[in-house]
Length: 400
Image (cartoon, one colour):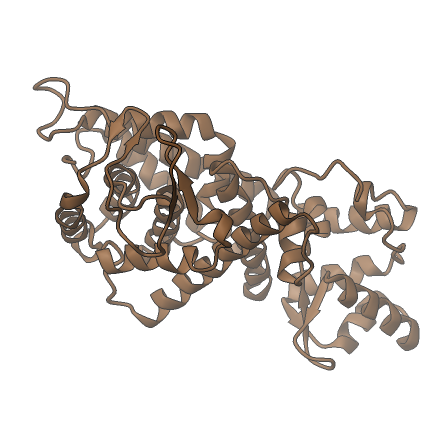
């Protein structure tokens, strides 16, 4: 699987530098508490787009319902809700482990196997099976178990199962984060995304594990601002390019000018260029959405739509909002976290009517509190997210 890093491309380094600097620029746009609310929303959105890459579609509204234990009646839809929750839970577990184990080698076999195990252990049995298209055999996928069979993925013939430990040892020793400095950690994270897919260590779930692993790499770098954008949305929206780039990077070395490994350096450069371009696209998208002036205006527009009863589709039965809700929501956004009395004062309402409106916003999830009398912070339920962050995910067209 050599080369393990792309070489000979100044343009690639320039692109990597743009990703680092532009991602860092996102971090200061919001109050830290509000930033955490956006990151929490994007975990849900990330699970949606990661499912899309796998050919499964579970709308963010359904994912949020599953987080409240409101399950779809159809068993197949319910299983996809569980798949989304498994992804969100795995993301949180990764972030927790990285905080508690600063010296962990995230390229190590133990960590990669752990990623597969924590995700697959949470899946329903229907999603833990794969079918051999040639023989018709149905095979159970064991959480955290390296494959024991040979695989062919498109034109790529995976390494023999018996050689997986050797390939993973090489992967772990080369890509350990402590070995890189400057822009090299970002380059290594992206190149290793492909090389992990090339190894194809599991019978199923390799793409999911690779994306969770890449999230871990970006968190460990660290890549400031990551979490306010996520690469899975970009990969899903350019899914055909993603699959084509993965396939092209499988290509063998062409000639003496194409690196010194068994695989093509030129194609690895192209894969990394594509991946960095996806990163820049997502950073730019979120930079446009996270500007304070625009956010404040969209809050006002959302409240006005609710006042006029113009919320479409499955959300049209929500009760109207009073115009003073604009001030409450804007205050919570700007201050991050505040006491109830301050929000009521910011609205200009009398105490009693202000508390009624505050209760409505808390019930809907637009404002959030951890206790009945505790401080309040800005919340972003999916029915609001679609208005505050246009095009973050597709709107639901059908009324339920």
